[in-house]
Image 1 (tube, rainbow, N blue to C red):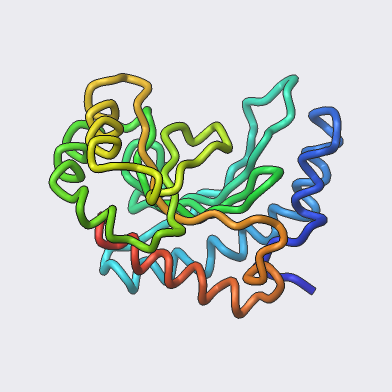
Image 2 (image 1 turned 180 degrees about the vertical axis):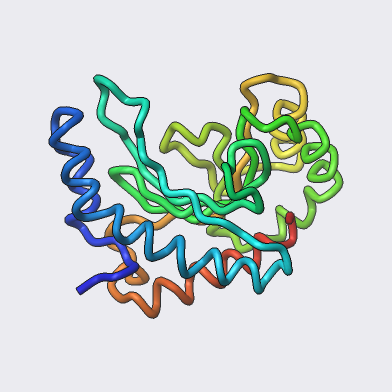
Length: 202
C-alpha cells in the first residue's frame, strides 16, 4: 500500500476523460498522498529552513469544463497561499512526477528573486546533471540543466524578471518507471535530498 509514492495507477488518472470522472479518481487515488506528503514535508521544510512552512494541496476548484492535466502540493511560509512567493512543489503530470522549487507569474517578488538568482547561475549549473528547468508550471515540458548554457540561464532569469508571465522552477522529474517510485521510504529520502539541494536558492 502506497502512502506517499506515486504508482502507475496514479499516472493513468490523467487518461480519464471528463472533468468529474477525472476529479473523482484524482480525489480517491492521488489527493490522499498529496495530503500525506504535505504533512510530512511541511514539517521537514520547517526544520530544514527554520521558517514555518504550510502545505497547500491543489483543489482545482475553479475548473468547470476541462479536467486538470496535473496536480500537486506546494509549500510556502504563508498559511493562506503559495503563488505569491517562491515555493517548493511535489506533484505529477500524466507522464512524470516532479519535485521543484521556484517562482511563478503571480508572485510580486519575481524581480527581486530573479536578481538574486542571476547571481547564482553557476550554483544552479553545478546542481546534479539530472535536474531540470521549467519555464511554465502549467506545461509538462522541462529542460535538463545539462542542455542549458550560462546564456540560457541568464535569458530565462531575465525573462522571469521582465516578462509578466515569466516563471522559473528548478528541480527533478521522475518517469513512472523510475525505481524511486516503488517504495515510500525511498521516495521520501529522494525528495528530502532534492529539497536539501534546492535549499541553495531559498
